Image (cartoon, rainbow, N blue to C red; front, side, top):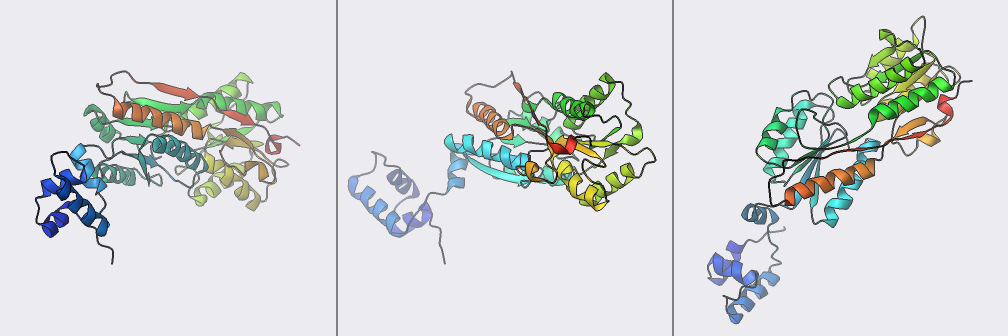
Length: 342
């Protein structure tokens, strides 16, 4: 069985004080050559390794950052995490990832768990259920480094990294309109999220620009953003069962967009023959769907990098930071056959 040895174990075995052993292991000039050799030889014999948690308690730094996302399997977040890790590890930081699965309660528990592990800062993308951000406001006011990305808390003045959600939604909706669709429904996620409002407003602005109505019954909410397939089935069944059913659907969220394809097929509708489809997704296989999907793609990797750079800069600042950056990056519209009116 593996045994983890401590400085106290070495001190007891060699009949030395723990402070002498500690200084010997750290190469202190205060320790004689013979004693230093005795300690180092014994440490090598028992395969001693320093305890990183103990070191972090001593130095008040763990060289680790916590990341909170809804789901690692989500295409956007997996790409963002790659960007986070690329900066963190090159800067000497470890990354601890936790998932909320769109639960506010789980998000709160994850925050406490990460704090108990003495992370030096947090990168946060809010869960769909999170309406109360007081725990983050408390930490921020105490000077704890926090950066929000993608799903941000607008009531806390700290660093944020987002995309131009309005423009991305506007362009995708206008592509559907230019293809000849006039009756366009929107499938969106929880109203708590700022990105939901920005993307809905972009959709609505494009429709209004072209004099097209947005009836209330053309707005369908999936609170868990496509993670629960039954919600998507219910939303699309309701929309496509309307007497004046939509000719096209715009989806505001990664999993929602990809989930619409099998659900529509299951309901007996062909894309784009019976209904057009466009939406936000970073899925690497969106071009391999049948038909290939018209998508709004976010620069997730770059967003993860930007958020991590801002967090590490905050962590390593020698002075309190009172001015914060709101980085906004652009989206890319990739037009494919799912939005082509037949």
